[in-house]
Amino acid sequence: MSTFTLAEKILSHAVGRSVRAGEMITVRPDVIMAHDSLTPAIIKIMRERLGVAHVADPSQVVMVMDHVAPASNVATANSQNIIRRFAREENLRLFEVGRGICHQVLVEEQIARPGRVIIGSDSHSTSYGAVGAFGTGMGSTDIAVAMGTGKTWVRVPETIRVRVHGRFRPGVDAKDLALWLARDMGLAGATYAAIEYLGLEWLPLPGRQTLASMAIELGGKAGIFPADGDVARRFDVPDWLTVDEDAQIKRELHIYLDEIEPQVAVPHSVDDVVDISQIAGQPVDVVFLGTCTNGRYEDMRTAAEILQGQRLAPGLRMLVTPASSQELQKAIGDDTMTTLLAAGVTLTTPGCGPCMGRHQGTLGDGDVCLSTGNRNFKGRMGHPSSQIYLASPAVAAATALTGRITDPRTIEEYRPQTTDHSDSRPVV
Image (tube, rainbow, N blue to C red; front, side, top):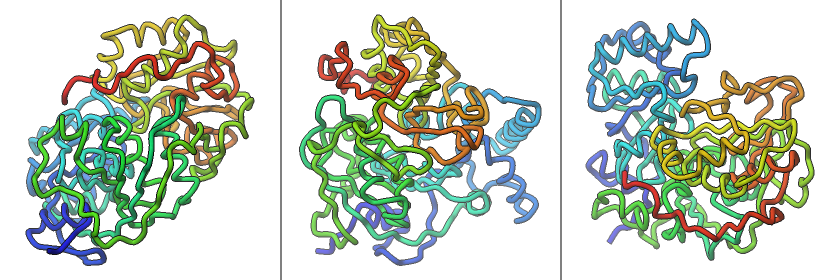
């Protein structure tokens, strides 16, 4: 019997025949996602350059206002109104300002689900692999073509398997594993490959979203988890979406979680990663908790457990941007948000927030930021002279307490295993 990788299985099902790595195929995506930052250009390309007046199939297209939401200036407001008019004219699904980040929203709404092919105008569309979908980002022209024709082309990617052994030690989580992989593989280590994450059937969905989101930081075309464990409890999983252990792959990495301590990416590259012991003590001006990588309830809860009864370090500002309105409501539903606000954090609108440096906390000249985001390139969050360190929510909260990069395991009040929140989220 023939065996296939997860990427090959999903794409084979989409085209109605068996396909293999390296093959060029034309596929009808189940979902075409576009966000506010690029959609006006996509509309213009489709209608003016391609000469296509309407989208081929409105049921495929989803639009989300998340990158600069709410609008930061008149030009942005006008661009977003173009999107609103287009959505009304074409009868498209549109998630408005405040609903949250596209990748989080599509999972919560079960628009992204196991076995689907999802393309998006955002590079972190690899995030949809967390639920066992084939998610990938494409440029504006490719998205315009897909909207206008209902189809796109894909070269079936080879697969790199990341096989994980053991469990995280206290103070270590999925973000540390994502940074560890960037450190080990580099920015081009998985160029145009699909990464299969195995051995993590116990990992709840939020951790899977963190890892799948950052597959693109390794150059990956997709990052795909088997639809097992937490995902199988939340979603209907097709019978054919199983792992073939003997499928032909490009290579396999073995990662032992008990070897990993908290990781920090230093400016200005995601793969320039060190153990926290090498960078502890670095002064920080701003801590940012949020993004499609780490803006969920569990991330806010982790920070609240560390900040409980404490105040931010003098002179430090901490921004918290929930990934979605549902995640914010969950944090309001217990003492999570109350604890964070009492500590002195600034809460912003659910969405991408300051991740791209366009609003709600843009970094100034010389600012140093510890971010739970996914990128730390020069000028990413504001002024080119600012510096961005990437780390986990636990490191972010510990750093907010001290004003310098701090190992959460050194914070006496932090007991990472006191509460299990893995099953505390509402079923989506």
